[in-house]
Image (cartoon, rainbow, N blue to C red; front, side, top):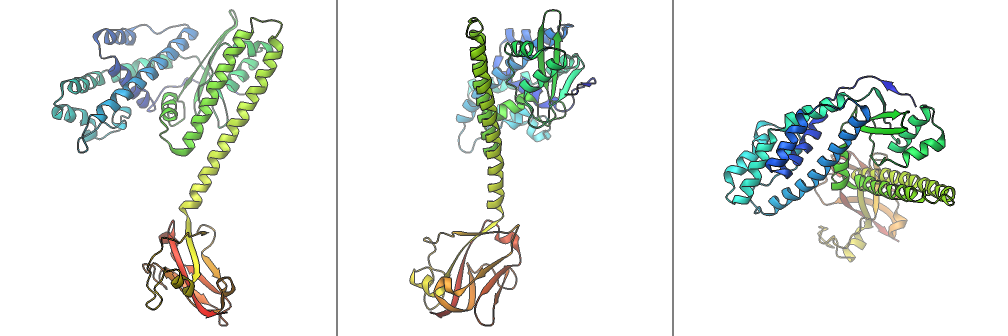
Amino acid sequence: MKLILKRSLIGSGMSAMAALAVLALVVSGSAACKGSLEKGLKGPVPSNPQELMAELQTEKEKIDKASDEMMQRIEAFNASRGPNERKIQFSELFYSDLDPEQRDVLEKLLQEEKTPSYRNLLSRIIEDRKSVQSLQERVVRLEQQLSDKFVIAHKGDTHHKLAHDYLIGEGLTEEQTKDILNQIDLSEDLLPGFKVWYNYNKEDNTFKTYVTQGEAGQTPLAVKRALKRKLIGERDAAMAKAAALEHTKTTLERDVAQLETDVRGLEDRRSQLEVNVADLEARNSDLQTRGDRLESDLAYRQNSLYYHVESERELAKQGILTRFLKNLKDVKGVSYEDALDLRQARSITITPGAYGLKSISGVELWPEIYQEGRDYTVQVSQDGGNATVVINDPNIFRQQRVLIAVRGDAT
């Protein structure tokens, strides 16, 4: 592991953290809490790197807890709205890159709100929103005081692994490293680009670590919030399961701390914990694989044409086509069991024997919105031994269901 020695200034990514800070301010709402906040913003920055990391971690936990409470209050406010009444969208509070009309939404809601309790809530949100800049400056100021020892997280990295590698690089033995890591929480979920900061004090054998946004597109708090609220689809649901595994890992680490009082059984239990951690990492890898599989399956569905092929005679017998006018009548019983991945192929080949025919004389696609010659082309061999439906415009057939009626002589 290569340490990067460079001062990192927090850029535009702080907007999401600042927005989360708004939530902490709104939840408090009282003069006492506001006084504590102002005192914290104006207070001195710890000069000791370990105290600095401890304060940053404490503030992050406070913001996270307050944001949970604020989420509940926003949900309560939205639940009170009627079907045609304006509701508060989370993005209107969490992000700063909004146009003027979006930024004025709370003022408009306040003017329209008649219920005193909800007017009071909206008034506090508007008032406390003014503190965002001061809070942002405080967080930036604290993070700019971090020591220059950090690494950039890459795909597959975990907080535990990076901290382990750092301590080994500082000259600690494997035994010493495990003892230290068993005493701290390393459950932070990492995205590629996150900066993971370190401070190890050799004199008192203490270790602190802290995670900032770095080059990633989201802050650590935003990632944690996305996992809790399942806002990024099925793949994020898999990531949330990984977070649950991290929680299990934390529980096991607490068990190790308890077992350290039992000297006789310490080594056996520690060995068992290592086996369990390896199992958790394997399960985490499996969840990643499942997420990739879901992405592949979704891409296949989005780019496929689903179709059902049958002879005209059989379709008429089933009541799907009218027998004489050959109009589409009822397709409720059609399963569209076949699919054509339009990223890989553009044609469907049909042979007569599979549909009780000696030869093929023609093929039609239903519904009639698809025009032969423009959207698709039918090619029938001279002896009627096969027919090919060629898709001319794949874009209009993606995720569509098509009935293919085959005309010919029965066997």
